[in-house]
Structure formats: C-alpha cells, structure tokens
Length: 459
Image (cartoon, rainbow, N blue to C red; front, top):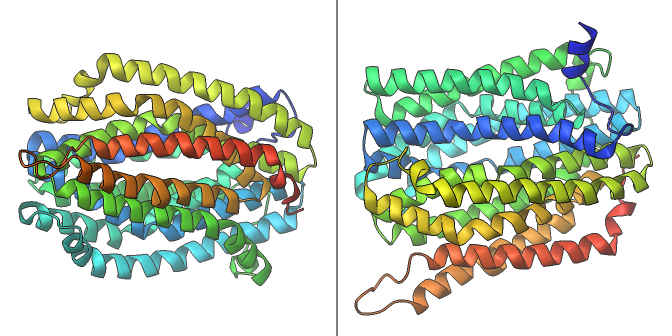
C-alpha cells in the first residue's frame, strides 16, 4: 500500500538521480499526452471513416478557433505549475496551499468567460477563416458544443498542471486514460448508433473531459499531507493572483500568438480547398503524436527545474538539463524513424482516399527533421520557465510564429503561384514551419547559455 501511495503521490525531484527523476516524470507525462492526443485523433478517425472526408475537414477547421479560445487556460496552467513546483521544492506549505486555491477559482472564472465568448464567436470566426460552405455548419456545431462544456477540459488541464508541479504525473495519467477510453466508447456510440455525426464526437469529448476533471479534483482533495484545500484558500489572494498572472501571462500570450498564427495558416490552407484541408487534419493528428516527446520532456524540465531552483540546487538543474535533453532528442529520433517507415499505413487509419494519404505523407516527410531540433527548444525553454523566466520563451515563440513561420508561409506560397497552379505550392506551408523551428532552436540555445533565467526564482 505504501509503495502504491508513493507511486501516485507527490514526488520530490530535489533528491535522487536527476535523469531517473526526469524519466520517472516524463514517461507518464508522455503516455498521458498520447492519451490526450487520442481525444482529437479518435474524433477524426470516427468521422473520417463513418461520416466522410467533409466531416474530417470540419473537425480540423474548428481546431484553430478552439486553440485561440483556450489561451486563458494555458496561462493559468503554466503559472500554476511553476508556483506549485517552486513552493513544493522550498517546502512552503502555506504558500503552496494559497497558490493552488487561487488557481482553482481563477480557472472557474475563466471557464465561464470562454464558454460565453467562444460559443457566440465560433461561427463568425469560421467565416473569417473562409471555411468552405459545405463544412461550416458541422464545424460550428462542433465548436459550440465544445465551448459549452469547456469547464471540464479547463479544470482537468489546470488541476493536472498542479499535480505535475507536485511531481505526480502518474495520477494525471491514470485519470486521463480512463477519460480517453470513455471518449472512444462514446464517440462510437454517438456517431455510429445515434448518427450524431460531428456533434456526437464533440459531446463525447466534453463528457469524458468532465470525468477526468472530477477525478483529478478528488485526488487533490486527498493530498492533505502535502497542502490544504480549504475554503479560505479558494478565495483568490492578490499576491498569488498577481504571481500567477506574471508567470502565466507570457505563456498565455505565447499560446495566443501561436493560435493566431494557426488561424492565419488555416485560412491559407483553406484557400487550397477541402482536399488539402482534410489532408492537413491528418497531418495535424500524426504531428500531434510526433511532437509529444518535446512537450513531455519540456514539462518534465519545468517541474524539475522549478523544484530544484526552489530548493536552491542550481548545479543539479544544469546536470539534469544536459542529460534530459539528450534523452529527449534520442526519443524523438526514434519516433521520426517510425513515421518515415510506417507513415502511409498510419494515414490509412483516417481515410481511404489515396490523394489525401500522398499529400499527408509528403508533409510529414518535410517536417521529420524538425521534430528532433524542436526537442532542444522545448527542454531549454522548460528550464527557463521552471526558473520563473517565462518572458524569454514567449519572445522566442512569438518570433518563431509571427515573425518567421506565418509570413514566410504566405511569401513562399505566393512565390510559387503560376498560371497552371494559381494557388501556389501547398507544401511551402510546412517548409516555412521547418525553417522557423531551426531558427527558434538557435535563439533558445543562446538565451539559455546567457543564464539570466538563474535569477528569477520566487522563493
């Protein structure tokens, strides 16, 4: 029983072998991210196989709008994880309890705002994106249902971020797997048996995410040996709220800029027609899995750095980042090799249309090298965020997306327009992404070595 409690409890990453601690955290995080990615992937598979390519396009067209509205939660989750990891590492129980309570209350408030704004703004935004008439009704219905049930997803992500800040990525994984299995079952029932099409997968998603949120909250309620979750701590304190905003705002802005970039890129993709939109959906789903090691190890480095900086163990941070980044790059290399060897077989899961498979495989072939270099950016950015420096990664990300990737995509597509091909070369979009990843990695390495992040600790 004690062993199980240790597995599904807070983990002190300030002691023990740094690499072992990072792996112990990152592996459940990676599996959890894979499970979470399955939400959207299963949606796409079900609608692609049982409804059709237009339905697949509709789900994909909705994604940039959904990401844009999720900006508030990204900021709260990032700020929460940093605060929790540093206060836990410093063994400051009162501050830990106050920061967690404030995060929960602010998440509920943000959920209400996004629910109203998102549901009302979904269709107008889809029109601004030049979403084709044949899929806009489906895309709009999907978004409205997701936004109405946004609280479940928001609370799970923030509460999961709190658990990860405490070093417990295993509990978050368990609850997410339960919710994912539920989502798969409901997807099939709502679409195949009830013939609800795109609305069915949206409804399945919000139900499953609500379940994961409830399970995560109950877990936090039981962690009385680590912090207190009493009514007095749920009242947002100015100090914790301001710290949360200061730490989370740069990440929220980063996500906002990234989401706007996706919106602009989606508009460019839409100009190529529904075939390329559907192909782009397939790419996004496989890309979502390929990029998961980067986000998983990046989050692991944030928690590892946060706890150890809170405890004043800077040398341990530097040791962990070297070995952790090398490990992350190795994992990404293996995944890239798997995609290049079995990519077309993976794409056949989504569609039987050969044109879609060929277009999707070409895009993935262009991006593969970038996944490896992206690991470096995420790991080093994770360390800077864990130290409390969320501004530097923000500017790097803004430079990558708004300064390089998006304008370069429009430029390269424009330069490839010909009388025979008036829309330009679709593959220039992914080429611009690859170029921006390399530039961002170079900037990140330089900023990490400058070392200003070492002086940003909270405690």
